Image (cartoon, rainbow, N blue to C red; front, top):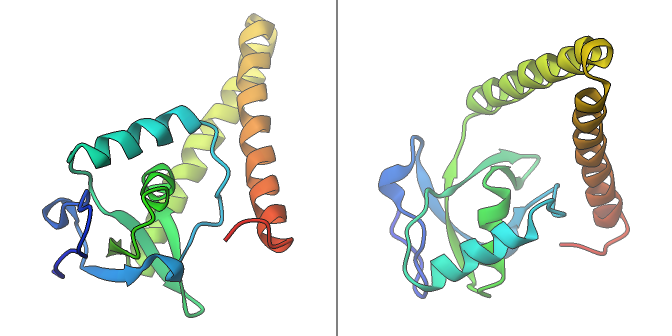
Length: 152
């Protein structure tokens, strides 16, 4: 375990499952920087300023970069505090792949539910489809904004 950076210390290394380390915030890249819940980011930032403790964000080291694997909203909230360093949990490739598999299974079930409810409850199917489309739109917009240099 690594000690926390000076300044605001909202992340609790004891809540990490994998090794932790302190990184410059500039070295952490969030590929999905656009959130669907800005109000939650504001809440997290306020709670961080008040001294609440959170699990460290999870990153994976890939191609020389630390990519956010889990904790996108916590990371966005922490960035608003303008702290130079952050305590992160470094996932293994296996842990990240496991997380991706779980998300794929969950999304597959949701997509199946959209299809099956389209007959029995078209309104519910439409609502689920809209949440899925908004998610993928946000992902595409985040990646496009990063490619255009509009987000760090």
